[in-house]
Image (cartoon, rainbow over all chains, first blue to last red; front, side, top):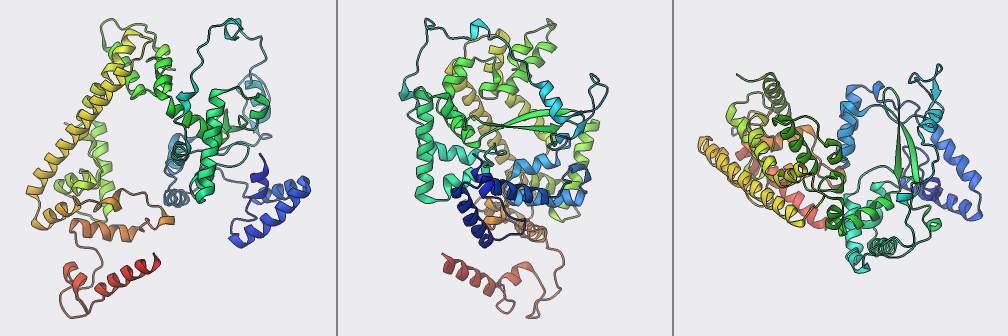
Length: 294
Length: 201
């Protein structure tokens, strides 16, 4: 999981392809020898060289315009729009930085302490959520997932967007993997499709899925406050999105019309219109708005 | 009497259009032309004050089946509901396209002859793709500000800025003359670009 992050780091921001190849060969040799300590030390040294201050509040309008144009020229439209959105808040917070107290403590707390506080405590599971041996269940037939193929995985990867999980491979990297290497890309897409079909149709030991479901916890600056955000692996998002595309109608039918997060056509728009009509009508008053706005 | 929001929207668009196109003088016909979709010769920068009512009504029609289910607090979602919504969406799209075609036809009658030819040329397949493609540098789709302004001037028949007064052949400098003048150099440049692209293939 850490192999891409340790082996593929650029030595400095102006390095060229020849230097990358030279460093990659050296790092692969260290990896094969098992010398992970040297690789981690090298990686930490490169990270320390980055400019400390990426805070958007210190960026001038001209710098913002330049970064916006650069992101648009790379085709990263969503990142470009997020850059100039005023309600963006702050960026990620280091774990040991201090944040303002929310009033429950007298002294400022570290980001790590705030995140630990937000984590729910262990509880006994509710009996209704446990599947007992005599619970009736309807196993979907595996033919339902037969339409998940390499082409669907490839199309899904091209529509992906977002940050990297613990492995360090973001959506842009996976787009390259799935499209730029001829037969190797086709084989990769077919393998991901087979993985998706296997996960859907038979039991897979959870221990074997640990890297797949690994998640990267990031603390974002809520200005003020801390927002915990979990970023899962991109490959997990690709496979899950492909599965959801294959069985979208069944998911929407199972969720019902009140759960708009299931991907209903114009779901949120319909919720807004429905609430608007309720508030305008003569009955008005209380309504189960929370039930339809999950 | 326009509301404060409508006035603010109009003001912003009136500042946006000159900076986007490099043209200082903008009348209502130019603004209406910009509001048309690119395949009708416009830039796709819609006028919110004119589109909101149509779009709101279309939104109400498309969401109506789902809104009824929310009012009933029903837990059953049938596939027919989605089919009905898709039909309503297609109807709204057809109506919108018909409305755009009507506006484009009415506008074409008001425009000078040169701009009418431009609008006809923009309806050719692929002619307006350069306006709707993402400006990705890696694929050579990015235009810098000056190139974009010049391309827009050629597209809309506006005179580009900072032109010399005379061509090297001695004649008055006009876009149509310069693109075909054998002494000016543009035909050679066009020929060489095609030659280079063919050689790269």
